[in-house]
Length: 326
Image (cartoon, rainbow, N blue to C red; front, side):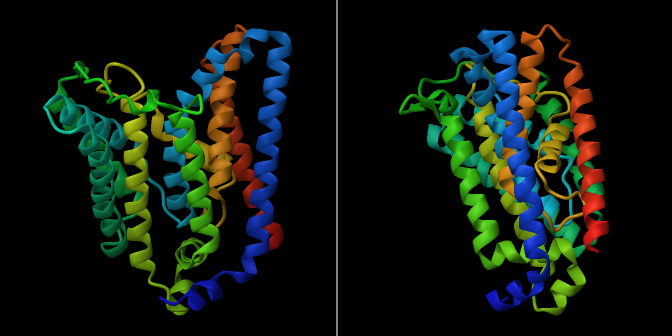
């Protein structure tokens, strides 16, 4: 596939794509600032260092996972197994390090395994033409069943010193924040300034037209899923190294939170439109909303309702934009 072919597949949509997602990113950034200002004014403890650490560090792995999810959705597909994958990869990381393997292998192993698992999923979707929601739903069942069978629901403890990557700091900033920022920037550059990124947009917008211009639609989909799996591996390591023990399960509905962050961040559920910057901002916004509910003495269960309202409003707005420009 040539860069010229990838570029030719999507130029007509570029201004609309960038303009709409940029507006979404600005809106999310303003919403975060406004939320912090209002809640801090009502309850100053909201802006304490401990709470800010909980918001950013405790949810950085969700923002990282949403980056990979954004690539998948932009390519015209979806992955409902990412929550289970993160749980399995976190468990693998813990088992490696507690069984005497080097710490670097416990960090790198989940990234490689995540890429390989989703490489298979991507191949099933691209070459066997199984709808992505069916393929990933099957993988969800396989991963969850395997995880419970292997661990029996027990948590992993006895982690060695130096393993907790998420507890490291650089210039007094926790490492998960650095991972979130660095991976968002790298993914944004990949999607905006490379032939591969333009191919992903083209495939998500119109796979038939992309194929006609010489883009390898199937190989692009497989690569997207593999990258998504590798990013999921990074998210799993950040999740696994937050505490002194590793949970054998992930938070309930994690995959829905990740998908919601991508969609509310401006990624069109229909494919072909979106950026990873918006998904990162949306993940931060959700974490801040969840924390603010506690400080405002409001039931945390309202967070799910807010997420539902936001994703419905975002999808409706996206459909309205498409009708105006179509």
